[in-house]
Image (cartoon, rainbow, N blue to C red; front, side, top):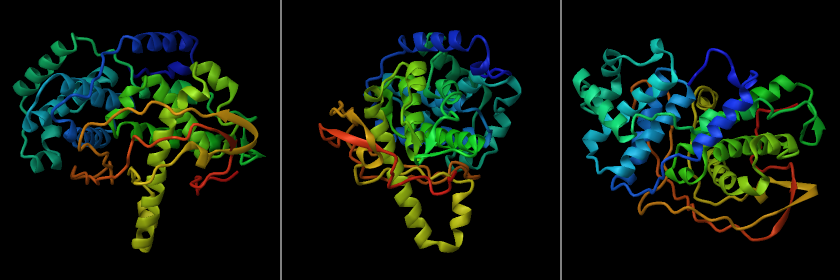
Length: 359
């Protein structure tokens, strides 16, 4: 639940974190067996668009998508009902995570452009009925940690003045922290793109978002002892999830460069206020990002979670579309790409490093 104070900086931070870690051990199992699994991405986009429109906190957005995933996994729901289910999941999540005055109102929801395009009108009775159905399905338990619940705690020590940027000391610690937060938020959104990330514990996904952000920002050491101690995850633990996040990042960079070439006059506008999340048709390995001469990390072929047939990760072209029409783009990304079983050298040279970040 969103607190007025920053809990990750308080005296109870360690206790709250341990409670979240304990709770994630009891999360419901996810089997990925929904008959409408191929539509999952569309409704996750819908939740993200509405969430961004009302400026809800990331925890509410992630919890809303997680509730949708669990409900779809348990029930065969029609497409028309899924619209109501998706919005009800977001409303329940916002009531749990946000202050009361920030919870979207029924009248405001019905006034959204996406509602008319979906030919959907929400009623008070219909929402109450759906919320009760959802609560009964989850046994009135919405205390379900997601990756967004861990990220701030990890970010509190994600950057240290002793870290190096591209092998050199940092001259602006606050600027580095700002970019770290932005990239961590980006990778958090990437983790919502596909249900395959539900195969990992939420705390692990959050830690993987931090390590991939450090990779892209060329910070070394890649996974310092302080983060390993705080999260409880080693580099080897994070590698399978980080690999998938970097695949998406590679695709996003290529897509952004492609759009930049197609519309050179609008590149400044595209880089500001829009997020492009697009899976790449080519597989990328962590070895392409890491290349440090002084350390070696043993790399093992991780288990690859399977995707449902005909389910391909699409992407947000703009999460802040005012009319709510998110444009989905199919991707030929193969999540089962094999990773060589070998040791590789790690250094801070990246093919897709952050272009706007300097010391």
